[in-house]
Length: 444
Image (cartoon, rainbow, N blue to C red; front, side, top):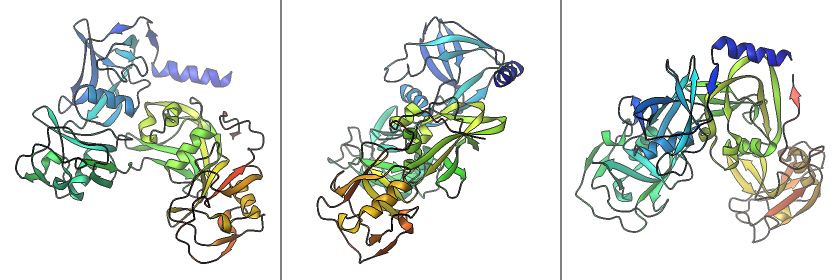
């Protein structure tokens, strides 16, 4: 009762009282207003000849990107809450997605101190057909038309500028045909970026007109994700309370208002290159604090964490603590306790050959991953391994807490023969039925 009362007092004192109707309204038009161009500013919708701002509730970066694309404004760069002094419309979640034009998406909401949604789009560059907002086939806009770019007209300095312009990290891959063939028209000049420009169209250029890129020459680009997620307060970078960087500041992630499971916590471990999840639990703080919220349904769709952070922050006393395995993981399995074994050394993951692995080794791995005893371990159980291959023979006694604590011997290998990359099935986690569970353990 005390906790419910405290939440009510916080909401009442902040003036965020809301009245909302259930009647959906047709949107006649959308725009971004008040920014440096038509591709940045507060999101507004037109209904019955009146423009109104949009409430920031339930929005994440992926949904904001839909607005940029519908406005022909490239890709989303930033999206955040902005307090305003007017009433706003509330978006019905996800109704903007996969629509050529917005439809019945909004309900009226009047509040004393509303916060609206501000979006900044890239305007003149975008990545299409990629696996995230930071990957895809490059297109550049000129005279209201989007053009592909030929591989021969694009180098690393150009890629660095594009990645920075899109709010992403450094370029990791750029090559022709990476994300499909480009359609006409084709960008007709050769970029001459120094690498420190803020936008691709700020770079110098030269060349003559082109009509097409040969098949496979339309440049695709993969940028690294910006460093905006971390685990803090644990024994390593792969353990601790989950924090995300939002609006330029690091904030803890609310564990109470989102249905976190071991499966979704495992996505965090994998995207941080921290192996597999061992533990995920709520941790209670003494005071209510401003926290970020992550849409776990978005995470389950294999979207990157940055795209799943809900733009509107919340207040909570429950943070999320995650412990990852760091140096071992099971991939391509049917559960968190099964898969092909991989071991990390020098930031690279290696498969393990069946001949270099026995039951004592398997017992250590299962224990390290928080699973039960090994039931099956054999080569080819979960697919063939890719290079590199672990170069030594493990010599575990079976009671070690981590596989890399075991002794080892042998000479370097280059490959495992087909079907020899060891796969492992451990029994399930003690006291847990399946992998989709609510996090029940609260740490005070």
